[in-house]
Amino acid sequence: MTLILIRHADASNDDPRPLTDAGRQQHARVAGALRRMGITVERLLSSPLLRARETAEITAGAVGFRGAVEETPALGDDFTVEGLLASSPLTLFLSPVGGEGWVRG
Image (cartoon, rainbow, N blue to C red):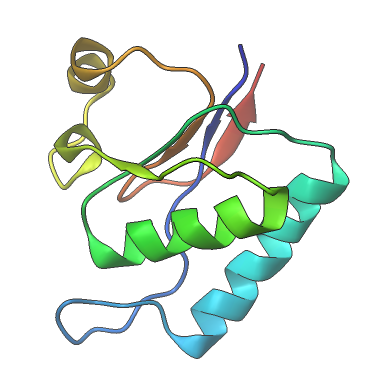
């Protein structure tokens, strides 16, 4: 299993904090890099927050993921690894709120 954590792209300061145009472009480049690396997605999880959901949807489109983005409160403002592991069996992709993204195999 490969687990990829990606921080949401640049977001507006206005509630509900959607991605900015620059944030959409920024993450399109990141998602394009994942596609060029040959990353495939079996499952895509996201925080319920709009900015994280939009980031996950950009990723899904770039890598050809045809499933539904699954929202989980475990990836919200009170994110902990323990809480995430207790809430869902992991398969591949997570889009948490906060922190920096990384790839781990």
